[in-house]
Structures are given as C-alpha cells and as structure tokens.
Image (cartoon, rainbow, N blue to C red; front, side):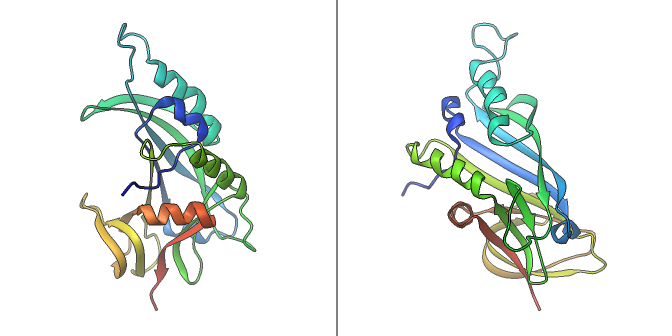
Length: 217
C-alpha cells in the first residue's frame, strides 16, 4: 500500500525523498495566552550537497532548496548541508508558534497548543492547509514524505500524566515506541519527543488540527 505523502509544489523540483519538520518547546509554552515563537528546523533530503562536476560549488538541487524552502516555511533560513549514511541533507532554521487556540482561529502557519484537556496538539492555518493540499493534488504519490517531530520539556511543578495517541514517543533513549493509546507519566524536568504517525499527519492536513496527547485525570 502506498503512503499518503506530503509536499509543497515548490519542492517538487528538488526530487527530495523526505522532509523533516522539528520543533522544541516547554510544556508551559503550549498554554501561553499569547502564542510565542519556538525554535524550529526543516531538514530536506536532496540528491547532493555539491556539484558532481566541481565539489567546490553547491549542487543545483541545494540551490533550488535554498531558494524555495523559505517560500513554503515562512522565515526559514539555510543553515548547512551535509551527508549522513549516504543521504544528503539540507538544514534550515525556522520559527513556529506555541500557545492556546482562541475561538478556533489560527493565524500562524503552524501552532503547537494545549489546554486544560489537551496535553499536546498541532493546528495549521487555512492558508497553509491550502498550499499543502494543492501540492498533494499535483504529486504522484511515493516521492516525498513529511515527518513531524515535537520535543517537549516538562517545566511544570510536578510530574505529568498524559495519554498519547497515534504516534511514536521517545523519552530520551533514542528509541521511539509506537503508540495507539497509552497512559504514560512524564517526570518533572524530563523531556519527551513525539513523532507523528502517518495517520496523524493525514488528519492534521485534512482537519487543520490533530491531537497527540490528552491530559489523564
């Protein structure tokens, strides 16, 4: 079965295999009354970092990535390109937002959020959804995949009890545990990373929001 894959139209020319979107934040950021900026990183797999004819020059695919990625992820700035395990990766720094969703109105392209019931959720703006949907309509499936990873530090005064949904969770041991529905404790001052499942990514794009963890009573 082919997976539903997610790209943006301007990335098609890059012939990329995968795009990773990652962010880091504190748990308290998710319930901020005013959405705040949180660090983000976009990693794009490209055919090569350097020109095969002259390694002192950057490749055409990297040049295209440096031009086009900022047009998709607003404010993205090129950081580096390197090769790891036979894959060439172009890295961009960017900024996302975290805070409460007010009256269902999302003005930021990507917003990580929480409230008294939701531990961790992601929402996207209508305009960002439209860009993504248009790109999917123009793409033959099986070319590019979007991964979304969220690293959260429990900066609250006590341990957290969260029920994680349809995701992969890592508590710092570099091993992601696949979860459908699981009640887990997050110790004070500890950090966990959530990687969205393909189903969660699809749900996010179709509905402009998806929930990754709810608060356990």
